[in-house]
Length: 110
Image (tube, rainbow, N blue to C red; front, top):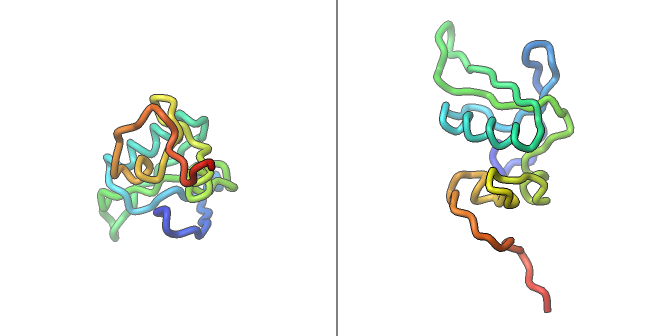
């Protein structure tokens, strides 16, 4: 699930109901999301996707908290990066992994 889709999908992985974070992601994206979510105290479940009988090389990343919605978590600034800063949409989408020491706000005080 990317940040422009707010649909909340629940699946079952290993007998546990999970909220899908993203599906169809490659291995490097899966490792990034898993590390970030585990840092934020979520139990992460990963499921390899299949095409017919063979593995496709893509993964579904989910958390066991069925109320988790990545759009809400990122835009409400509830997630923390490994360096201790709040996760921005650019960081979540891996557009810019460079972080600034000051918090970036979407508004200014006047």
